[in-house]
Length: 267
Ligand code: ADP
Image 1 (cartoon, rainbow, N blue to C red):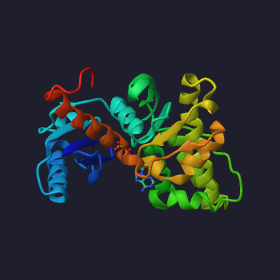
Image 2: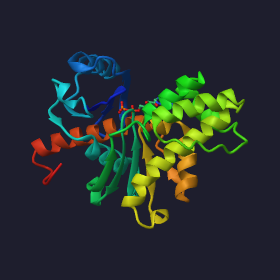
Image 3: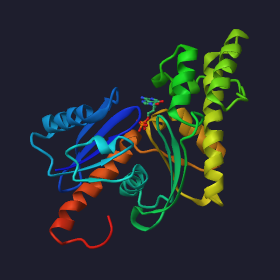
Image 4: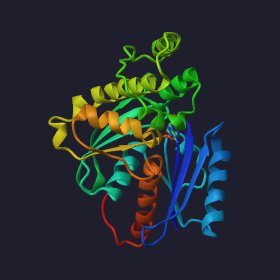
């Protein structure tokens, strides 16, 4: 039983794989105060699901140092790359949008990282941007995707900065603009921001197989807005928020092979 645990800024995620590579447990827990308590709580929930202790555990995410039972820690860039490669062999580029950062990862052979670029300096282009806007619109962040599809008017949100965009949203509401049109405009604003990361990395991007991951990818409106912007189908895994944890679990399963001397090379 191989556990991958990803302690992010907003959520702790865990996946457990069996020897056949099947997902046998999945745990999602808000980060809250985080720390070792969170990691232990997630581990306990995994044990309840699988009925035994995981054989190996690999930790990733910004809180990975607070996972006392981890056999190994790996960066979230490497784990997202491995997780996506596990699901889509043909993937060339990963766009991950999490709570506090967004990243573009160019994959090399076997899910290795050929290159990456990250935005973690400001909220624009991250989940936090949408969390703040949802509050201003008095809707749940989980409802943004459905609202996107109700939009029938193309509104442009000119501010990419979260602080200015929040004021812009409030004045658009005051002018009587519909929530769904504002939401779709916000989705285009966030994807424009992510596209500027992507453009610098991926020449001729329309030819590349692109996968969108992270909690924000649970919002289908974002994948649609990014597909429109890139001009090619953007693929989203069934459980995009768990991709980093999945990659960590895949690496955990390889720890066993390494220990048994069956696998050579770099993890
Ligand atoms: P982190 O790894 O930084 O904790 P995640 O990849 O877990 O981040 O993504 C968290 C973000 O995902 C939140 O900020 C929120 O905007 C978004 N999110 C989480 N759940 C949903 C959902 N059900 N629908 C839409 N967006 C979601």
